Image (cartoon, rainbow, N blue to C red; front, side, top):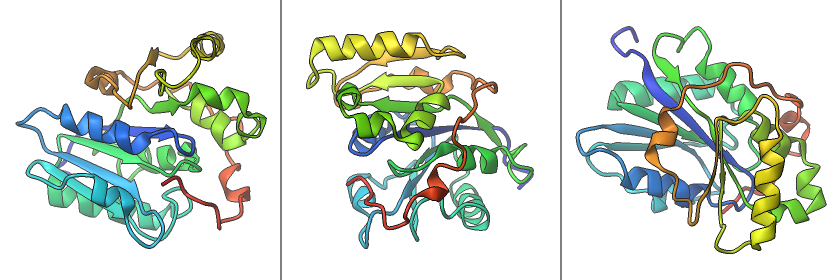
Length: 225
């Protein structure tokens, strides 16, 4: 794919029910008119719920990766789907949105692998966080949840209009103490993330604590609708 070069690429992560699809739609509404974007989303159940929610218009190519989690279907399936999407759309930007139980590490590995090293320019990974999750010990203890935060360059504390202000402040305080530090911790409502967050340069020092976390899960997991 030598004619495609350094396509700015972002991964949008976040745990179940955090509002990733809404955030993705908000970002798509900010797409410059003269740009073509490619979006790879996960399939949800038998019908692509997200596919229906996402517009497929001029300058926008939306593809779902059928057959379960992007992170479970890693390797050939993800690489082939990405290659086809890039060839079809020749995008100015690529956005990947895995399922809420998706571990980002494997996706990052594929995007930085030899097949795509000259094709894609992996920029900031954005993780949405619902501050109310801090009150759910089973979520806080979840290794995928923790690594979505560990591997993110930008954390968007979402649903600030629904959470208690004290919880939002607690989330901000906790995230402010993480090392390596996040490039941005922002507050947002209804997934409204400023477009410029996508162009922040990725921090190559971010590491997963639990790279095997996803594969340990029962693959019957419910995906976030």
